[in-house]
Length: 92
Image 1: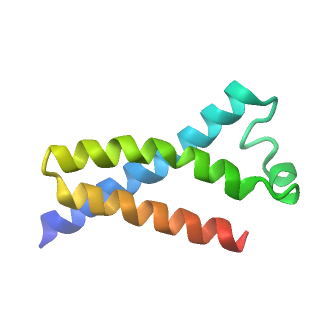
Image 2 (image 1 turned 30 degrees about the vertical axis):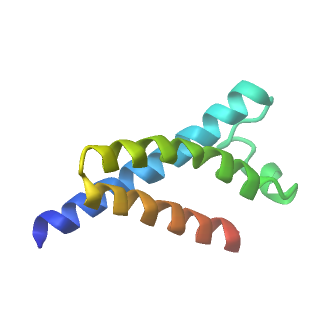
């Protein structure tokens, strides 16, 4: 049971990190904003949910990688990260 929780937690951390990385990459490549510097401006403009959704697209690739490698608990953690990030974005 300990390995399962560790694997889910590691998948969660990878999924969360990729979401932030994807959002930051999107903002730097296609806009003049920075996620950490302009966070309040993005949130007040109502764009945070859209940017996080675009950032979560990187999770599709890592989720597919985990499933193909039979790392099901890592994949569960990745999905759990998407759910948690979505809920946090919903309430911000």
